[in-house]
Length: 213
Image 1 (tube, rainbow, N blue to C red):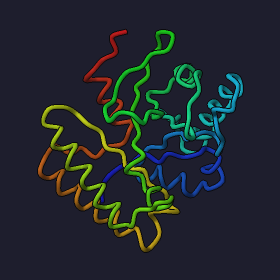
Image 2 (image 1 turned 90 degrees about the horizontal axis):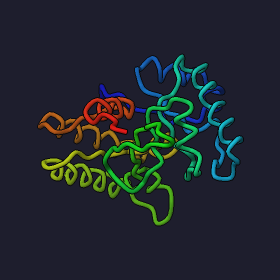
Image 3 (image 1 turned 60 degrees about the vertical axis):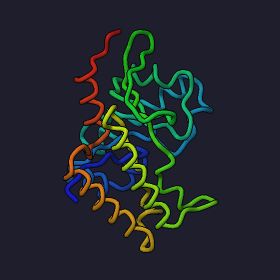
Image 4 (image 1 turned 90 degrees about the vertical axis):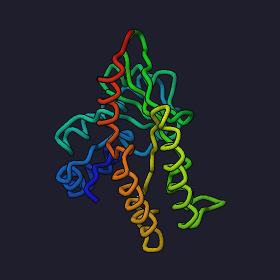
């Protein structure tokens, strides 16, 4: 479809599947850190979390050739997470489910862009009870896009579409994603839609709305 997307990946998963890491990079996609391995950060002490973040950064840099610029925790962040991400030089953080617009946050005077993530458009809605059918998920995603475009006459909105290979990639579901891509491309041709990676969005936001701390 000619689009680039962020692959939100656990670092250890890409270490164990180097062919996938290489293909993601070859296609020009972004790799966002989803932690070092599939673990809950909210159980960690500050030092444990700092080490966990550093291990993820070092691992992803080995796997992809560059440091990740964004981070998504597994479910919950801690009181230390944003400060630790600032220490490691992250551009943006995704751990916010209560908005659809980018914003700045700062910890001890160090800024980081918050790019909210939306769970309601996530393909997990076809996995957990009560589950959407692919048709229901597709209609919801289209309705979401239409509505934020209408609101976009007066403001800037983001839409996140979280996808998992084990869910959307099944033969009975993948057609819904194909149809949504076609619909989004049509709306983009009409104007007002920018399909971008999170890194691109964060960089654009930082340029257009400079930090004034």
